[in-house]
Length: 406
Ligand code: UTP
Image (cartoon, rainbow, N blue to C red; front, top):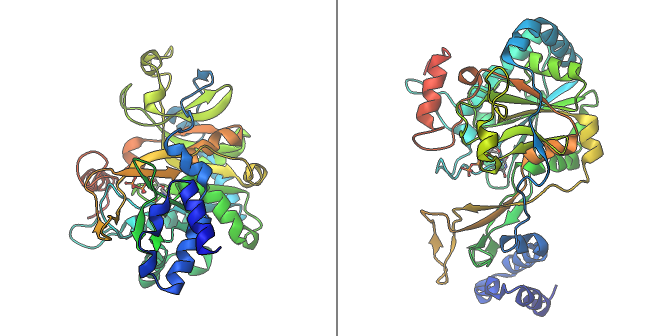
């Protein structure tokens, strides 16, 4: 693309400021900026002004799940089926570690965060320890695929290599990177992070499968039939939980979701429901007051299945839905960027929009889903914020309650 063509394209979209520092760039920087501008999905970018209507458009109804007491009753049966699947190499795990953890306010990969007090205990270490418990019991390893982004890929790999993957065998670990998307300010103008670079951010956790599928990693593990996808930031996360795997397989559903019962009707958590007969996650603000308060015959909240970002997907169904589009969410975030003078600004407050797809939107495409209830205090300790709710402090407290020495 010539300079004129580039300038014309950017002008057409009201983005000519991207070339503000063009005169100061070397040849290589010019090429890479032009390539970045060429790759911009202008249609997606336009969503800042006219976002898709993502509020539940369909008929929302409660979804039947499997409760703690039902699980307790049948645990042995579920566990056996799940463990057998693990032994046969049918279960893989995907660790979502491409996020930037802006709320935590650290540039390092979240998994490298040391949550220990008297000795180092890294978040990755907590997760791998939990996985090792399962694999040593099953006598077989679960292939572990780690999704990073361009922003933290090298650092994540170095960190895990340096720590010997916390005892997990290297030959069962693969890395893949997710795609990036540009960010815009509140007027829809593209941000620059350097004079010759657009500010690109990871495009949300909904792109994990397309990114994984592109790498060919799945071909290295042809026996895999189920993929357990989970967030990096829940330090009590149970990975490849045999009972969860077994229950989902036996249910005949194409996916499963670990859920916790909502602590109170208005808890700010996405809830697994049915939307027009298909499983879907409805955000807390999309539930009407009546729905939030509604209770079943046993007095439990009707819409109680809060999702904790631990899903099981059938691999064959994932292949089938691979080309289908999932909605793009326009999210307000803090975006570091260059100001007009070319100085780097690190905003204290949200200053722009990022464009993200979310894994929870894949549940509907899967067609069926088993909500599998777990005990919140045993399995859910997210590290999202510096202090307060879902913070390092609250996660430490929960780790201690579960007998982990800090
Ligand atoms: P969050 O939605 O909490 O986002 O991620 P985040 O980027 O980690 O944190 P904030 O919102 O900026 O503070 C939930 C999970 O999805 C992963 C995260 O790493 C975490 O495991 N994720 C998120 C990705 O892998 N890629 C993304 O683009 C976003």
